[in-house]
Length: 242
Image (tube, rainbow, N blue to C red; front, top):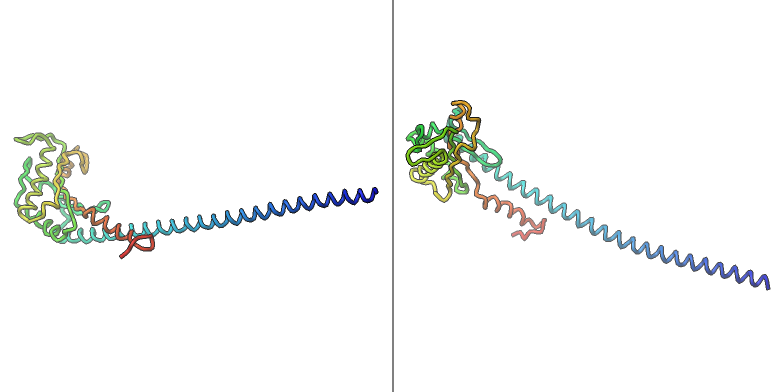
């Protein structure tokens, strides 16, 4: 009887151990299933992340292409302007590119007599050369800015430096429109007074530098955005393409 009881006790223990092992085995199987599911999801998420990175790389590349094309157009424009304006060693005329924009800066002593906003005949020859270039570049718009020094000015209908700078800008725009047939829809006239100086107004020489008219040549924004939009149509980044 004792042996039978011992055997049954041992059998019960073995059954309990077997049940425990079965339970652990099932738990391990379940965990492996969960791990497989997690691994699959992780792989899918990783693939989505990589795809997103590839799309962003293509978008950045297309944006860079648009900027490069804009810079190439600007370089050609600068070369054209320098070609027609001739000797640019003269400090009174400067052609430059800053932050993707072309600037033509002309000293007021070439354009106007002191305190006047009537464009001189000599200045019209210079503006005619600029007009020749911009008339051949219909995809550009431009802003004509008048700048003065900080010496207070008042004369006749002109109240202050704001008035003088604005009058000089509009005088240049009128010459470009009336004498050289530049489309007025492409032009904007602006007076900046003395608030954007090139140098401090502490000396007569510096004040002379600050008295200037600046022509800011701008690619039409819609043209630049069109270049970007064309890049975004790339089928590789989900665009529609043509």
